[in-house]
Length: 208
Image (cartoon, rainbow, N blue to C red):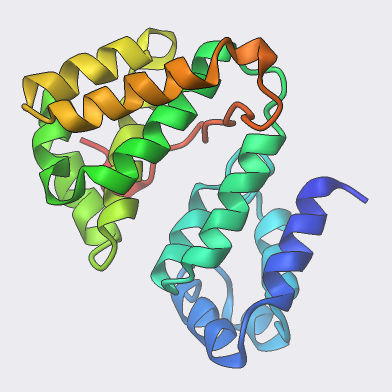
């Protein structure tokens, strides 16, 4: 079976009945009332989104937004793990960025807006990120970094991120990023770090 379908089945089996009701409510403007009435599981809903091309293996932005709205961070982590594991062709630099992103998300906290501005993320996008993830600082940080990565593409590097952290006087976080990557050694010698597959879309709430 397609690994992405396996992931969707896994997510569906972990949803409670109240989670499913909330998902259907969140999709009411995207999916017709008739189709929603026939949805009996998360997998049913995901199948409808797949049919409508609202959800694809390489376009998981909507799925991420829905899971964040449910505040199911365990399922978001499952999605992150899938994206990391299915990006075997990504460059070593992106693998390092994923490691750096995880460290930044765990340590920057309320300083994320200052970092986002240093990375040239617009105020409109910052407001959109805050509105999308009002209860999760770590998701706000991660989304800001994703927006920066999508905008910069190949020019987004660990060195650039560390430079921005130091410009914001977040030197302890910058040191932690550098020390962690140095301790792990060359990326081609690691077995436990996988590159990340970056979503090719940015939510309309982030558009300038």
